[in-house]
Image (cartoon, rainbow over all chains, first blue to last red; front, side, top):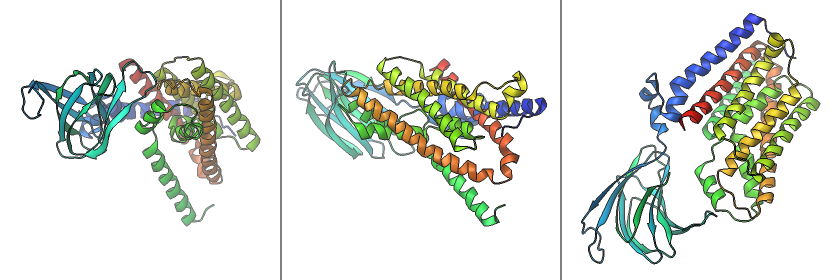
Length: 179
Length: 232
């Protein structure tokens, strides 16, 4: 059954356990999970790349004729970076029966996406999908069936980050990346 | 003891199992498709919830480490049954109570305590309490208490999804049943490997090393979770 170690052996075991845990934590786990990398080993091994779970996005507003919006009004060009192996949501707040025209393309890899809307004030988690596919680009428009937040969920199953360039025009206000 | 070939086969089997677990392991995280399901389902979804519960247990390495520590020195099936029942009683109570009572506990703190439970078991297996304090805490009570914390961990994770009230009771029972099923499956595997290993003289040789590593893994879990708590 349980064998009792001598004081010395017990102390040794405990210290060894702590040292191994400390080394593994500092060199591998913290860099990969939290981007905390005091030794620089995490960066060398590329582990810190795992620690940026959220996507990033930049917005530029320009006059554009890329989209045939009815009165050529302003369009927003948004670049969303979908990290390797992650899903990112980008949303717009829109009233009922408002229209959005859009066009997006990736910098290469195809992404699974779900263009959907969530009704305002809903707490049950209900959503309605307007388009669902795996593509490298798409152009189209939609009219909102209800007021709420509408937008894309992109999922990157590759092992490299994918940049999505999204151009939108219409009646909306930008909510941005879902935290 | 074993002929060379069967020893090799055993090692290969263990290694492939370990790699299988580490690929799928996500401790307390819930993967994206499960998350979508949990947030969008309505009404009673008995088998899906049971499946999620079972999967959570089988892929939750912190629960598994603790269980492995608990049965490390248990030889009689009566003892194993008793200890596992204490653990089950503990985590079922807090899982149901936590979700139904809407008790909010910080997930990082709970997971750090689960890490502590692993350290405790490793230290106890080394005879550490006997040596340093002259007595060992009642192991059955300890398993029950840590079981309570493991249950809170499960409850906290489920609550993050703001489950619909409709059919909550039934879904919870299903989830809990799944947890027990998953635990049973995982336990069978661990038990098989440990009892196989016990027949081998390396068991005695490496039991100190194994429990030291168990402690170490527990320390890692604590450090990992506490860092998340302070930075998150």
